Image 1 (cartoon, rainbow, N blue to C red):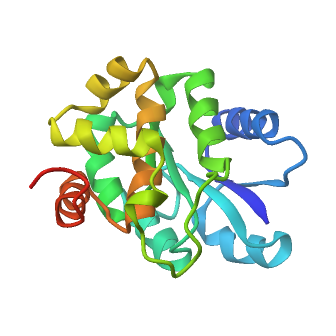
Image 2: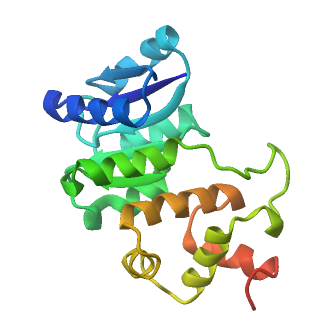
Length: 199
């Protein structure tokens, strides 16, 4: 297993790699400047533990890289780290299959905290193939469902819980994966059908 950072800007790529080595000492971090190099890199270094992708690469346009990675690695955590403001592309990236969208302007500590959270195994993950059940949800995940039902934004949730917006995104990513859903709407539908919140 290796961590892959795909970014054609050498300085930014170096910075992300440095953060990852601090977050996960001893892990193999593979740097790539374009998406087309990934297949041969995986053959050499092993399957990805997490993929970090910039949107603007020499061989991709917009969210096309997200779609390619999600098709090739449907279960691998995928973080888009881009200079493009989240308000412009985050929703598109998530719909294309990205788990988390991080703005490069967020700063080193925010980026590191988000990647650290994505790399940490969750304590109570359901076994593969096991149906999700209410008892499998963590206390934080149940809190999130209630706050989603209240219509709170990521920023509102972050303020209420005293955590960063990026950490909220990671918690939502874990919740979506746990329930097998891709959006807030699907989460609330699942929660109502399964009696997690009042219909």
